[in-house]
Every structure is written in structure tokens, then in C-alpha cells.
Length: 222
Image 1 (tube, rainbow, N blue to C red):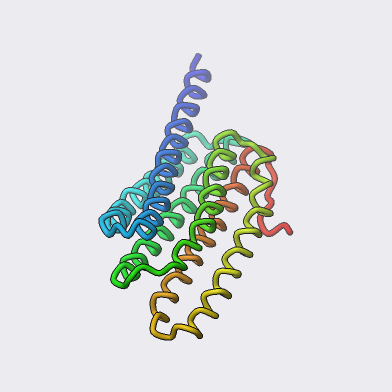
Image 2: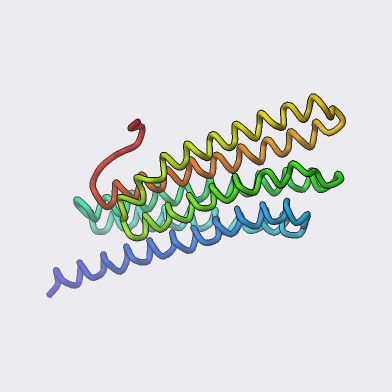
């Protein structure tokens, strides 16, 4: 009876930990999308909101870390249970970084909004769509421990990398034609890089999903 009680307590603690992670994922995802909406819709209030709400993501990361350590200390889980706790803590770190990228986008967007609208801004929309899709699928793969979906992320991230490089090439040419707009074009290039890095963090979350679900460490595997 006591053993069942201990196991039940562990399951409850792990479920709470994972629920905190998924709440964190929801806020981080919203921040990324709102930062881009602020840029595209020229809405400075949305940009400010993203910067403010990053604090909530930071607090979630601290909570997941603290609760994860408490679970490891209290229950000393083994095998898959251990991997689930560790992978949740690692995924939390990557979600916090996604929110940091969103803040970077919001801050650069606020600078861009001080100038007249730049047509090239719209070229960021497909890059954002790809990054957002990667993040959404990474969180779903982690939630379901879906190894096949998680393994699909890395090739798709290569597409995101290529889209970012093409964007930088096109804006570099644009800067040569319009030297007066160099500052704004550079801000857009930084935003593209923040989106690309969000894709990298999504891939990392997918790797955590594979580690939790299949006991395989696919980090740095080409």
C-alpha cells in the first residue's frame, strides 16, 4: 500500500511538472507570435507586451528547475522516469530561450516602427511561419513522446536555415541600393536570426522528446 502511494505521488509530481512546462510553452509560443504580429501590424503595444510577459516564462523556468530537482531528490527515479524529469527540465531551458528570441524580435521591431513601413518586412512572414510550425510540433512531440515527429524537426530546421540565409542575401543587396535604410535592414536581419534560433531551440526540444520516449540521445548526430 505504501509503495503504491509513493508511486502515485511521483506520478502526480511529474504530471504537475509537465503541466508547468506546457503552460510555459504556451506563453513562449504566444510571445514569439505576438512579437511578429507587433512587427507586421506595426503595433508597439504588442511589442511591449512581449517584453513584459517574458518575466512569466523566466519564472516558469525557475519553477520547473526547482520542482525537477525536488522530484529527483525525493523519489530518486530510475530509467524512463528519470529521463522524463531530466528532459522536462532541459525542454524548459529551451522554451525560456525561445521567449528570449521573442523579446529580441520585439525590441528590434520597436526600432523598425520608428521608420516608414519597409516592404521587405513581409518577407519575414514565411520564416516566422516555419519557425512557429517547428515549435508547435516540438511541443507536441514532447507531449506525446512522438519520436517520429521529433525526428522530422531537424531536416525542417535546415529549410528554415536556408530561408534565413536567402533573406540575408536579399537584404544585403537591398542595402547596397538603399544606403539610407541600412539601420532598418540590419534590424530585419537580426529578426530573421532570432527566428532561426527559435527553430534551433525547437529541434532541441524534439531531441528531449526522443530521449524521454526512446532512451536515445540524438544530440549532435548528423
